[in-house]
Length: 287
Length: 125
Image (spheres, chains in turn orange, cyan):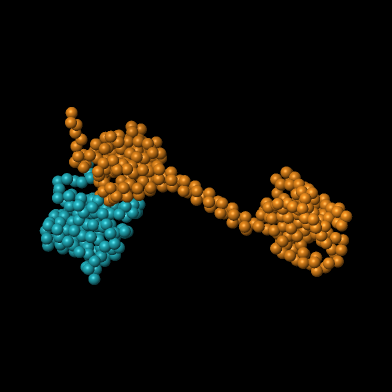
């Protein structure tokens, strides 16, 4: 990125620069670039309108101050300003993009080019520093990156939701939704949609909802389950809630959760038997 | 004008009604009138109300269905509501619409089974 410019001993650094009035006026009035000059020690020696616009300092406030004032405390800590001047002096030019600090303390994303200015004898006269404010572009980049991350996260959680709410047909007219993990509103919504679609797709009249894998049931979960069952009833099918373990049964009664007219069974096996009975099917053994 | 949209079909001793996709309040009101008149005229034993075309259910429709079912009940018939869309069922549940004790069935076949077997109370154990 940094490459040596053979003609760094340009007329700008020359003694007679001051005589080229129109050129000075041009540099001073440019508003889209901060064009400033530093002495070999890094003290600001000239200032233009662009610099005032980006950085907020008036010429009389800043001339004579060290240019490290434009850097973040972390950069100053790590010696970045001195390092940049050193590279520019050695290689003729240094380019960087990074956060810089305005007078009011706010940050802006800057593209900075520092060029070493040498006299005809090759001695270091100072540095020219051209800065562009790329904050808007940077903000767009950050927003895009953030959006990509958010989209990836949303996709991932959708995948997890899909995996965690399977609905399978276990017999003609019977579908099963084994639930694992806690039931929040979003999952209940997902369960409801998939269960109802499953019922319509397979023309099933009995839906087994197994909560063996659900760690705890609270009032909220209870209400979600009752909602799901009501929706299933509206379609013309029935729900059997299975996997009601002793602990869950105790919680339901202690919390006073009324599951209404829902048929409940302690195990999935018992629920499947009940489903068969509802369909007037009988399991018999040949032996 | 609204009478055009609903046809009450009599199949043996059952009345069969299919609701249009987006029933307005007049259509819903006219449904009740026509059903009750047909109940009296044909001395029907049951009503199958097919709402498989209906994509959104409002509270007025839900209430009218429940009322109509009770009126049909008073006239000695049973009402079975069939073919509700999953999305309609979800919306109805979330908005808290209740269909009281109106019997529901997945499709018209099952609704006819339920009406044929009057002793069996479907779904409730």
